[in-house]
Image (cartoon, rainbow, N blue to C red; front, side):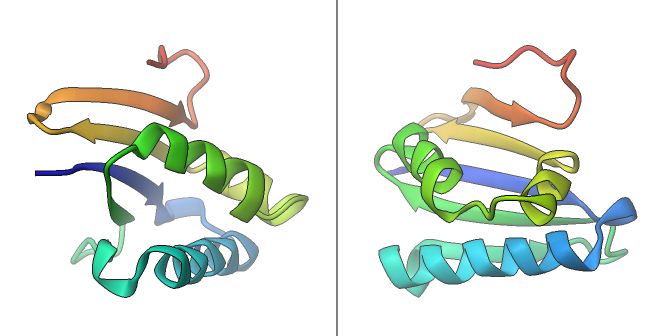
Length: 109
């Protein structure tokens, strides 16, 4: 079983630019890895969106997303202020790391 990278974006304050930025990231991931490796899951109340990406190396994938696919400027910054990014290991939630969090007081790693 592979590990996965999960990007959760809280929709309560998502702007149109951050929504477009997330769509662009999802599109790039699907082109790069294949559409079967990336799933978008929306909460029934539309409070959050999860992007789940299967990966053998989710930490490296996260670095690639941050350095290559994350838009620069306001739309990328808007996403950073709304997301939680987690690497879920092969043991699922018994083996996870927080890679990024909108709340700077949350410890990473």
